[in-house]
Image (cartoon, rainbow, N blue to C red; front, side, top):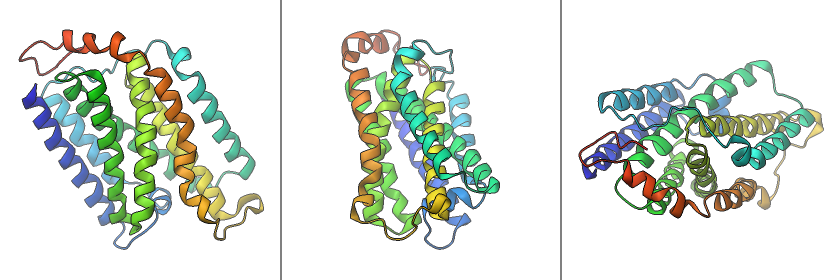
Length: 265
């Protein structure tokens, strides 16, 4: 299983390179993430997905959990309510222009697929097969948060990237909780996509001044909005994972036979 972790980390580095270099090819100068997502199709996201699917196929990793989920209502009732609140925000502010909506939907869907395959798929399955479930959760979540600091190479704003990193760590925990509790990667992909999509739609509506929302400097508190928004997700994740060491850890180890690179659950 150590070999699988090494391979997964190499893929992680390659995935970062494809994602970041692709973004820099699309925008030569520093830009905001909102502008990156709303100004065109991010083909680098598609390239990152292709990289991951190729790796999964080549190494025959059959434990990505492209399976039918269970316990959906019990797991997703609070995250679902939270998404409805954001959707209400989009309805209140007014949707941005149709072209912007299309780009946001396409790009955030690809981001959701790419990041879930990379972190809750490739990395988490490799780590969970060779260490305790909580260590695998923590390492995967920290790596997910840390990669968002690299947004500084797109935006040029280190402070903003660090805040995004903390927020991503918090959201990453709820995403991994969803995968564990439902036994499938599909609900996490869906939630990730909807979360990002609604956030960017709200951000685009505010930026365009829909419904008379002021577009000036929102003040210092706005700097920490990503963390504040993800705090309920983080608390929800802790609740969902409170018994995970007893109910899931041994299962992950038991179904990973020595020498089996698939490491099935």
